[in-house]
Length: 198
Image (tube, rainbow, N blue to C red; front, side, top):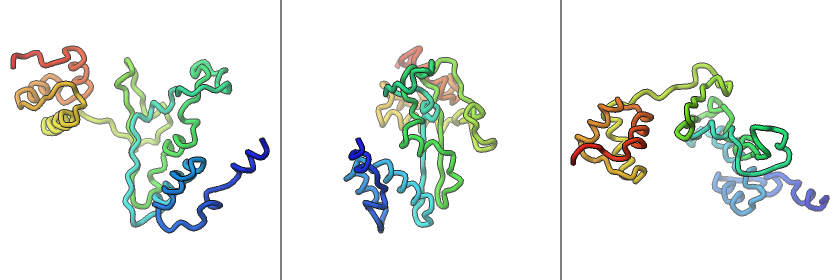
């Protein structure tokens, strides 16, 4: 065990003393999987301090990072909510992305989004996770043109089983949902297809 500890007891700087580009850090993380998380942390650190590279860090489904993962550990057996499963926020790689530190970026922005599509009657409010006041925004209903663009995108990417490429269908859906994405999804799950003659 001591030999294994001594073998793993090194830092990224020991293996990659003076990287000239960000790609060298990425290549080192790919080559040495034991250092992959360290390389990712160093990459984020360099991007945060860069004046040359414009950076966007986007995290979707942030609230799911507080749910139990599929990985088991006896250390979490005493927690009734976790039932012996490790929460994602206890993984080093995930914890790097969970920080509310976008204001430290010199030339970039960090965005978070929460998702509630698979949760019944559940809304996660910013104060539930001690989020800073004034840094959150709730997505309003989409205007008709944005709703049209979203439907066109979902049709092109085959994200939905049915294509909505006719204008009368789009306008009917917009009238029924008023551009509310949750109402549109509920309508799709309830009726499953357009209920008008084609």
